[in-house]
Length: 363
Ligand SMILES: O=C(O)CCc1c2[nH]c(c1CC(=O)O)Cc1[nH]c(c(CC(=O)O)c1CCC(=O)O)Cc1[nH]c(c(CC(=O)O)c1CCC(=O)O)Cc1[nH]c(c(CCC(=O)O)c1CC(=O)O)C2
Image (cartoon, rainbow, N blue to C red):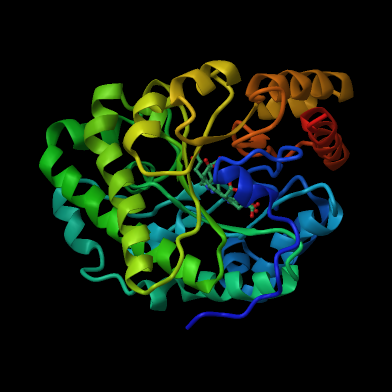
């Protein structure tokens, strides 16, 4: 069922994602609804993390917090959720204490039988769809709403490591010792990603972002074998499924953190409109590698936000100049190179937004 939503008043994000010239760069930041905001910490005092994700009224409230606080400065909202809701939907328990931890990670391929055989995404993750629809209504068209999911390789690593990891020894053991079983599991995760993103688009998400946060742990060779095919599977099938129902596909962004080695090939053939960049690549070099085939998003080091106003202004100025095409913003979404961290002063983030408005403006 298609929903009727209030008309969109600010489409800078969608125009930049389509590669268009814009009067200034649209800006948002990954993790913009979160712990650096006192109003978020207030909600978290009385509600567990996954309770916020699973309760549409709470997810809507925290998604809107940065939009309210930075009214007129932010050009996108992102639905409050987490990449780890997919492993939960596949039957795994995930705790947040305070970082993610899986009491029963997958140890060997025999453990794959513990996962749900069929994942009913509507039943398991329908709460995200409800939150998206409610948030679209509450946004009243002020800015577009982004939906997202984790990429198969990153989720696979979490499911096997049982949480964050420094050396990725267990997940690497899987791909090198059990490559066929690994590829099959990665594709199973990819199928859930497809259902999840299609559901988010139908619920009202206006752009979809896939987070391959641990792509940089793979060698270029192994990325091509264990991640890229699943990323192509997702972009191709999300569009196909929506087209089959005569629905438009929202623009899609891939953030493959640490995989700047793959930028040229991702721009060529991964099937995404925008590639998100971490801070380890120079903007002009990224532009050169993608040859105008995709839009770019990023890429200020999130820790610059701890450096004070002059440092922030200097970095934004440099980045705006680095991404500019013919002297102005085109096909660029300003963002950090990864999520904002909990200790940032919200007023310093406001300054970041103000600097982007100032230095990216087409003269
Ligand atoms: O330590 C980490 O950053 C990753 C581990 C972690 C995850 N969820 C988590 C934590 C604990 C924590 O943030 O402390 C747990 C988590 N997820 C989130 C929060 C809120 C916050 O950061 O203050 C939190 C902190 C929990 C809390 O409130 O106490 C929400 C979240 N996760 C995510 C998103 C999407 C986005 O980034 O915009 C969003 C929504 C943000 C929004 O609505 O504005 C995505 C996410 N979650 C996660 C990852 C994997 C990252 C990695 O492992 O390097 C990623 C993707 C990424 O950031 O690259 C896993």
